[in-house]
Amino acid sequence: MTALLRYQAALLLGSHRWLAPAILYASFLAVGVQTGGPVLDAYGYAAAALLPLAAWLTRICVGNEPPAARNCAAAAAGPGRVHLACVLTAAGAAQVLGLVGVAFVALLSDPHSADHRAVPVLPAAGAGLLAQLACVLLGTAVGALCNWPVLRSPGSAVPAGLLAALLLLVLSASPANAAVTGLVTGSAHGTIHTPWLPLAATVLIAAAATAVACALSSRRA
Image (tube, rainbow, N blue to C red; front, side):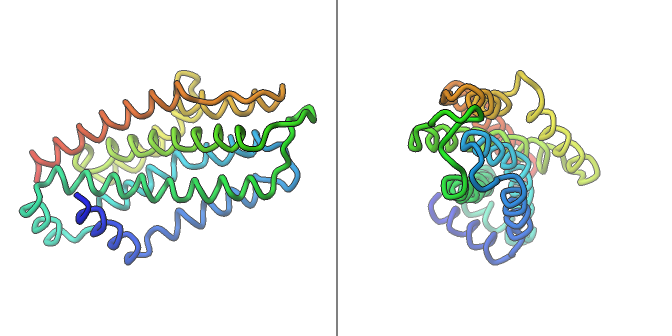
């Protein structure tokens, strides 16, 4: 599995298709994270932007390999393992962007709440990192279910992925929404809500979605 992950990471880096999501995320941060602004609000904003980006990176990774090379890798390691490596590579790339976002927010934002109460720096960074991880995992789940082999037509896969990412950001039942909202509402009162429960839910959802996609890849290879 380690060799497959290195191979997929090399494909992603060599294709330069990661540049567009990375530039878009940098633009989100540049526009939305204000110097001296409340740190928890900024962490919530940075986390929310990662959900559609993780779905985008997953689409890139599952379709990045030429068909002939994909068939060779599947014959050697199994199509399910190859697909799993694609999804894990996308999640890892999105989390790297998330770590950059955490560092950027920590450097620019001020450790106070919206009502100017002091906010502990390290607990706030920890809550922001967990919220970003929850959004990455849920975005990866969206990407796994809204692309090949689950949805094989780009005409349906792309709109489905965009709609799913939007709904998971705005619906109150979504764990990503709960994680981001916890940061924003905590900023209003100077309290830190560490999103352990939303993170646990996204771990289960991402694992189930990835398992479905890998199982279908084995059947449709």
